[in-house]
Image 1 (cartoon, rainbow, N blue to C red):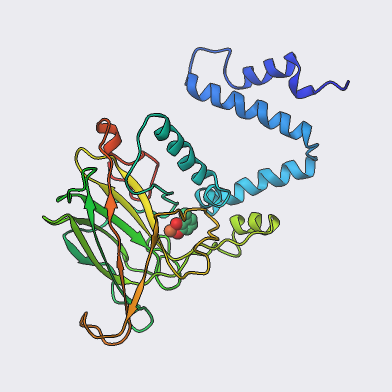
Image 2: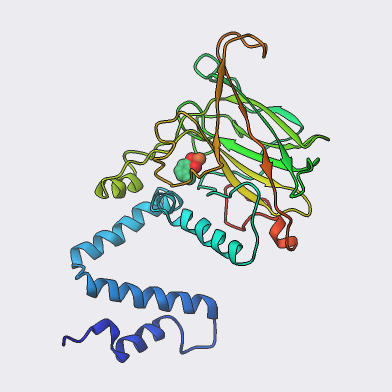
Amino acid sequence: MTVKISQTPATQAFFEEAAGFRNDAGSPRLKCIVQRILQDTARLIEDLEISEDEFWHAVDYLNRLGGRGEAGLLVAGLGIEHFLDLLQDAKDAQAGLGGGTPRTIEGPLYVAGAPLAEGQVRMDDGSEENVAIPMFLEGRVFDPQGRPLAGATVDLWHANTRGTYSFFDQSQSAFNLRRRIVTDSEGRYRARSIVPSGYGCDPQGPTQECLDLLGRHGQRPAHVHFFISAPGHRHLTTQINLSGDQYLWDDFAYATRDGLVGEVVFREDGARGVAGRYAELVFDFHLQQAADSEAEARSKRPRALQEA
Ligand code: MBD
Ligand code: FE
């Protein structure tokens, strides 16, 4: 029987030392996590016979991934962000929490502090006037008893016709296609925007480099992201993924879920005061009761332009 070097008491003690177990300073929680990462990495290296070349390529990959700010993109593409949803769904089921609109991943492209509007707003800056199809998006927010929720905040963001997001795509105006809408007395939000295109990973970036080696594409269906919040109710992070998109059920980030497909209806009747083709999308949200005040807020994930 061959001895696994990674599993000997001496090696385990060595990684406990490296994780700070022999001192009283620092964070016990982080020490525990780092010890596990070191021990599991050593085991993986030994079990899969990772070569030195493979190891140092991986180190270089992480440098390049961070350098391009794509760590959040890779965790979405490898399904880890979706796994966090599956884990939370399972915890909810165990706790008897359920009902309402399903959650799905936030993704890496939220920007805090979008302009705030009452009831309705236009989201696009008009810069794609001759390319984009106008989209009229509206719906209501409901409480668990099915009563409309006035004063809920609908914080939504989506891509332009090239599948890129303002802030990350510096060619767009600030907060283009990003708004916060407070629902009216009937719990309704209404937005005039444009039909987004699906996102595609930068073909030259480190995330797509990894996906290529996995034989996978890096495309998302057209979608609109939402944070929905209201006093006394559980924060909801979700998305509407648009019907008819070729990637609807082939999303590289695994965000499409039953109950989150938005039916886009195209019209050309002039009824909305726009010449030519436009799209309508109606989507309602159903919130859960908040178990405590912490449940009312979104996660504390670091985000662009994070408010204090
Ligand atoms: C996106 O627009 C997105 O929503 C996710 C999850 C990953 C990359 C780009
Ligand atoms: Fe997105």
